[in-house]
Image (cartoon, helix red, strand yellow):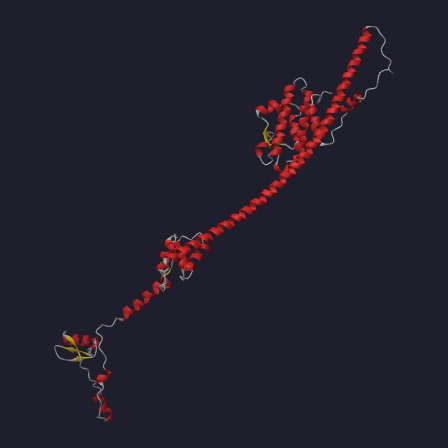
Length: 401
């Protein structure tokens, strides 16, 4: 039986508690105390007899006696400090890594996921199952903090009930499902990108077909215009030769002393009218006519140097073809006027720069460059320029008259 009192070994006094033993020791300097099974009698009955006259009592001390506690009570100050300490810790609560199911964590790590990502997935998926954690990883794989270790307050860190672990076959199955899900997602993305690329290819193909149709139509018109121009040039050249022959004939008759031919015998010639028309101060109405007139001026101003004129025409044709073929390339749409080769081939020849300006080029940066803005590129105008240049290059009678 546990002790219900303390007995002083020096004087035999029974004491109810450690507090009474401490007081007894302070008063008597006794220090030898042992536990006793004797209960301390309640001596208040004498007082009750004096007050009431009652003399019969029943001893129930053994029923009310309780085992004595040998722990000294904590001072009141210590209790208050403990309570204060609890309050401060709640204000500055420590952040810790959340507890997760270690079996599920190990299985996720076996599947190849980093530990931080696995812990984060288990914590935010409720630590419920491997499948829930894997689904969470797939849905949040693009999160910027996916591989950062999560932290939670220490008070919210609760142990989780152990979950049944997966067998190796189930782990392999889950891994296969995750790989299959990732593969399907990648295939869907690739299909979407392929659809976008196919739409772009169709759009570009339509634009190329339309550009080819326009180019063929312009080429057909250019050939018709070229044949017509060749016939006109040939007719004017023949008429000029005939007039020259008539003048030589008249000169020979004059030297021989023969009378000149009768005016009625001389056939009226239409070309002088053509020549007269060519000298009229009439500005060409269309851009193609302006380009043709510009090329005529260039050839007439340098008619003594056919090689230089042909080089200028070929250079201008190269500029027009490059821009028409590659309108998005800025290097074909920007010409440095101070370039020595450009000056030698086109810049010094009157009419060369004017022809490029008719194609859409503009002087920029104080006249240092000729530049054709992308939004001002006119494929039809460039094709027309190419047609006029081809006609001038291939027609030996171009600009003779």
